[in-house]
Length: 383
Image 1 (cartoon, helix red, strand yellow):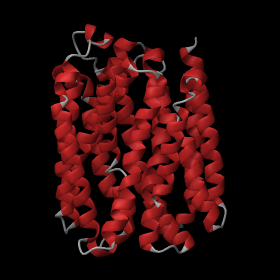
Image 2 (cartoon, one colour; image 1 turned 180 degrees about the vertical axis):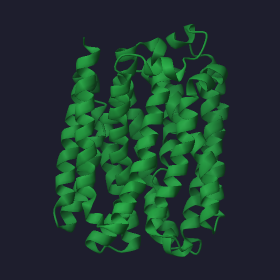
Image 3 (cartoon, helix red, strand yellow; image 1 turned 90 degrees about the horizontal axis):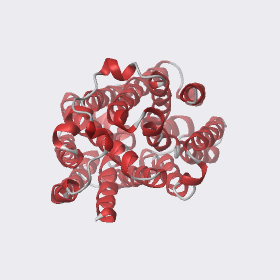
């Protein structure tokens, strides 16, 4: 039952990753058809991330009331409905409307499952869990690229992914008895959910929020703007760029799979440092004025990103206590989504009014901030 439930959790993270790369790979085709500026992709991501912030902040209360299994099943169903809504939309404001349930569902899945795995499974499984998120993100650009060659275009890409999500949601509901048989975790000994104020008052929490914000600002900017960068900076076709958008996701997925074999031996702190070094190398390659170096750079940047997110999450019960982990992981997710909400559209404005080739400078700023906040956190929690 232990391994079967783990397989179900992995599947849930594939469902979380599937929609995440759709907008970035499809936007070069969506933008002219919808008749909006290129920067409007950032508006959609802002709405999605706004929903994830709300559901992440409520995750402690929701999970305590309904359980991680039911929260996950309902949330996957919400994202499936939202993606189908995208597939039947032909106006920008309709995409904005459907972005609300998508964001609410994604945030609830992320917070509930991350805490569940951090409490019940090793660092190795946390890394592999996020590797399966990458599997979903790799699949989507290819689905979108395939759909762009057909009659339905980008709407067909969303339609196909929505059908996959519906199937995963059905499996989630069928798996609910397995979640009920799982032993209660340590955080459940606390009768009432923690307030936001009391959670923020815990020593070191603000530092980890800043580190998470910085990491997700860099990651989400690459997720959204890879295709557009390759088209505008290197003259790659729209269809080819949609496929190449998966390069970052290939790097991050392969990196997390490989990290799983060494995660228990190296530990979370070393993995974050190694990952940040890889991110810097990837940014350097992206900055070079060559198409092949940019393609390699997005893969290397993904490899560097690979251990950072799961390591920050997995270290939360150790750094702050298992009884506080659900509340803290919830606001970590919220902080992450604040970075995902505001930073990609900020770069969209830069791309509109200056030059999209400023992407490497944008990324190096947030990577440096990640390193500074992470090292300060290490010194704080060790005191």
